[in-house]
Image (tube, rainbow, N blue to C red; front, side):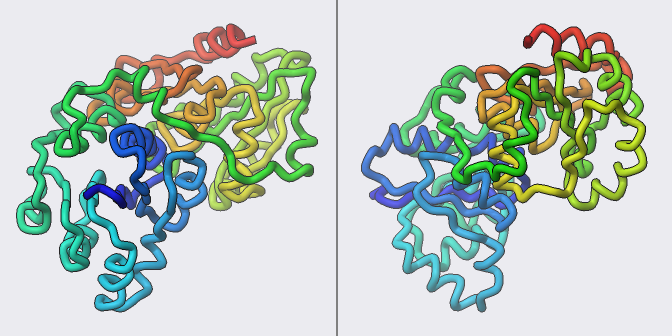
Length: 323
């Protein structure tokens, strides 16, 4: 029993990062168990950074198989427990079909009532708990009965890059300055601060103290190109130039990162570099639920449903306090 436990979270990077401490708790509860993580292909590099995850199972690859092959594939893994952190009707049905003995899900998904045999009452929208704490409530059937404080969640997150940073990127970092990453866009996952404010911040922070890097996806590269040309000379554009593995390694070597509630913010927090998240007060995207979790993680909250209440001066003061 509980020799091979599968965590199911087939959504975005930030969600995955906040789920990874679960693997640490499972290793503590069941030291001899194998812990695997089912996630989408693009989150694979993130999942592999957790020392507590023994195997990444690629959901994208799994979907390329026939229905019969999918069940056979999971069955061959000899998994005895699955935890549905992210409700996915297909995965829930597949886990039952594959004969996984213990299947844990929440009561607020109807399909869990006929695909899971361990149901946990959990309402995320109405809860005052952080997402990382809410995830761990799903371990109640496995013996974790108490709500875990954030400090304990951080302690169970052993996260580090698994790919060495290529020299072409490592050479850009300035050992004599504070290497700050600005990640202005969010792919719609967070309320954005505004390019005008990011520009003003870059102009406000002293160039003799900071080397600034702009990061973003391939799609964001084209969008940001005209804006990047207006930035000070101590700002370097890295949008669309890194794989996710390389971005993780670069964040880990930098000194700090500023972003709204998006994946790179949570990566920076997990990597124990300074991470400042900008959040609105509107539920369910407020910092009480989605603040970065890490030993050097911080956030600012606007007090409204947008980020207008967070000034450039406020952010600059906070970042300057890191030096």
